[in-house]
Amino acid sequence: MTDIALAIVVLAAGKGTRMRSDLPKVMHQLAGRPMITHLLDTAAELSPERVVVVVGPDMDMVADTVAPHRTCVQAERNGTGGAVKAARDALDGFDGTVLVLYGDTPLVTADTMRRAAAACSEGAAVSVLGFRPSHFHQYGRLITNEDGGLEAIIEAKDASPEALEVNLCNSGVMAFDGRHLMGLLDRLDTNNAKNEYYLTETVTLARADGHMAAVVEGEEDELLGVNSRADLAIAEAVVQDTLRARAMAGGATLVDPGTVWFHHDTQLGRDVVVQPNVVFGPGVRVADGVNIRAFSHLEGADVEDGAVVGPYARLRPGAKIGAGARVGNFVEIKNADLGEGAKANHLSYVGDAHVGAGANIGAGTITCNYD
Ligand code: UD1
Ligand code: CA
Image (tube, rainbow, N blue to C red; front, side, top):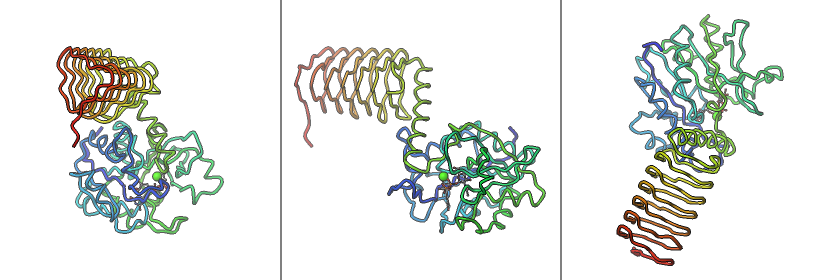
């Protein structure tokens, strides 16, 4: 890459109507983490000089979630172009590359972001990350010329049947030469099917000024946009596959990877074996050589070397399972530690307890601290 300064603007003010939710769209979770957090964590890998998140007027929840990043409020939801305009103050005096990310396109990798930004530092006024979706979709179409340069982006709702045939689509990731961005935004109008300021119209305007516009292509898996619950499930599947691959690369055996569900922060050691249908909630750390048997559910738990958990075990926050300890079927453990080599093999609830090393909790035992 070059050493041109980078600013990142993340658009998150949309209502997300198609989610049919009380939550702002970007707060919906992937591997237990809001989409917006997922995206901002990736964006941080580019070490941008400035980051600003554009939110709606009633989105304190999003502002709190992205803190300490700066937020700007888009007073009226008048389109993606309007949203970038709302970031004007935050970009004041900045003339490097401005990378715009959509909060509902959370899976873009840092490398792909870098490629989109690099096209701008190599002379394009605008560069757009394109991809070729495999299924029916409503993405904007990228209209290119014979040289492969970009001429226009046509929104699906505004497209002629001929333009709809184009399979190269807009992922929403766009990079701008900061010296031209505000001038382009000032000339957007709302003469289109949605009566909104489309950020995508900047391409036509830049071309009319004789500037270069570029397309950088990426993979569908990382560029899919989340507009509905069905899209969210597709994105979750992509994230889970990445986490499963990471666990296996780290030395864990997943007997049936597709049935194991991770939280983004799950830590598994080497030679851990995870049998089918295991779910990891937040805050689980599993040390080396642990065997997690089928149908177990773990959250907020620490499992030491060589322990055996399950089948059908439930570890809740504060569960600490000592080295070589065993937690068997239909045993629930909360805020309790099981010493080294201790056993709770059948049908027990162990809450708020210290269980010494080597102890054996008999079937049907309950320990708890009501209140
Ligand atoms: C947009 C693109 C489309 C592209 C697709 C990729 C435009 C005009 N269209 O369409 O070309 O193929 O993304 O997924 O840009 N937002 C605001 N304020 C607004 C409106 C939207 O902040 O007033 C934010 C949303 O929160 C969202 C993003 O911008 O994160 C995209 O908005 P959305 O309405 O989902 O655009 P699409 O119709 O998906
Ligand atoms: Ca979208």
